[in-house]
Image (cartoon, rainbow, N blue to C red):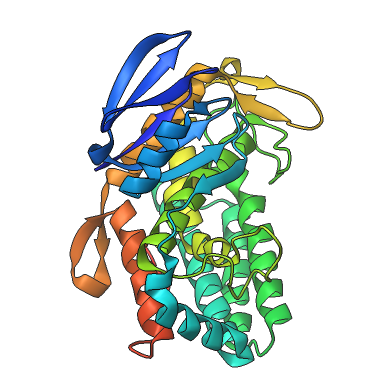
Length: 335
């Protein structure tokens, strides 16, 4: 089972038996047996025929639509949510309770800050601790201390915001490629290549997390840290937080510091879309992201190493067991 990205502008996916055909101007460019697909990500202007939609829904393939600028647009979801009614009732009961929602929000923010701190400390051990890294470490430790005492959701969000400001204030000091600079986090739209990579990476990570949420059977739209809002998968937004530093941020750092991409691989679109990757750079980034998802990492709760994609699924399962009263959720933390 694999994830396939389709990036060819104007391409059409059509059904041929149990196979999808990728057609460009009526020419068949590739074929994909649907039983090999776990997730299909369509980037940009890609057309699905009715037959292809029927096949994807029938086989339960998670099909995600993303703009060429990296913005999530939606997904095809098979209509089998009724199987998880009991679990979803438990989710609603837990997150409808102020104490239950606070506990989950505190857990995911704690995991995020600890992973941010690990990334900074690891860089400091390899390349030396600068004053900026020292100040960021102090701020992150202070945010963790305040988080332990947090009794309201606003306080938890304040700790997350303070930590993010300190972390991204030092993030630029981790970059050793002078051709790609980072002056601070900007999004909607990203204003420089590094922010463009981060934003697109977070979108891809969110796709993986939401697929795991659907697989386990939770409701992606009811979360804790991120308030419920029309069209926003709040639970997905919550669970993404602990994985941002160790999956996306570390990948972007490696790409920049190893000069995998340069300024020539990006284009400044306009005030609405900001800086985006050119098509070849986008395809390479997708390839590297999938390699990261397949990379093994230590998963302490099970005492073994798992691919990142499976770690995410296991974390969502842990949360489901929490909702059902089986255990208390703890965020994934790298060492």
